[in-house]
Image (cartoon, rainbow, N blue to C red; front, side, top):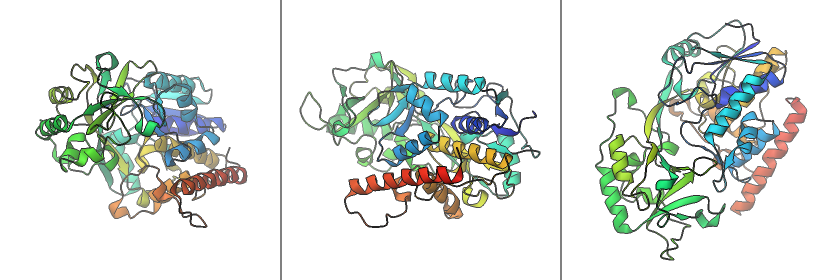
Length: 439
């Protein structure tokens, strides 16, 4: 183990953000990433902050919970958000990136920082002689997981994320698929494949009986509701998809002038528009079945799949029993957890936890007290959720308006209420930054 002041385990979004924040505060950091020495089931490269599920970091709308969180992170000089803003691709009101440019830029920035040293090796035991941030994410290795579990004295919870297919743009029939965003919000950044009722029923019937990757005994865990495989959603009833990823509301097929019965949306995957992601089509169907059934979708009859869907493990700690709102481990205060491992869900949320862990680890090293953002900030709502939820039923959570505390005075208008929540969050964050001298 190196002589660095701080050890960060994991070179994903949270680990890179944590390492960067600590290094910017004068702390020497050893960032350990096991790839390519030890590969994972989902990653394809050895680059830091490689995005494996989607290229979207969620909403960038300033009055959306995920957008407010991004605004808070920008005020805290987030490396992840700064880089994402530099390599965006069109995605309506969402912040989506060219994933190759994004990972390359993060890797370059981290490797070039004079206070950070990247170590390519698997760490199987938690160091005890200095502060450590564990940001190994949903694909934490089994050996390290056992070491963590021996420290936290609490069981791990696990669920499985499904990955959506990516399609070669040139193989999409744009005489059928039309460009639009729902309710014209965000321009025409999505390609939409419309379906009639007959086409939808044929698709549904094929999907319902499609051959799936067999479920192993250790996979008998609940899915996170934001990432349920398309075929599992279909199991809930014929109409379920029409109220989920295939909902047609807010869209008009220019060929008919009417709203389609169902729609499959495709989101641009890279800056050049050469490939598209099937929005909401995470799946664990066998690969030949994916190609057969997804080519039943109008506009995708000749689709070439650059990546087919798959399933990968996602592991997280029982945060209410394990960590304080500072992200410090209750059993060992010099040990911090960050990223999806804490029980937040989503790229932005994971990076946000890394940012705070980096700040607090640096403060601990400098002899300062760790800090916690105010409860009315998006940061505060997530920290409150992951540290105060009922540990018997703890499940991962995205940033959302249901987590914010009530406004002092009731505001009936939904849009105005959200605007006031956003304004309060940023005002409290600015005040906290000044008072805590955290940046």
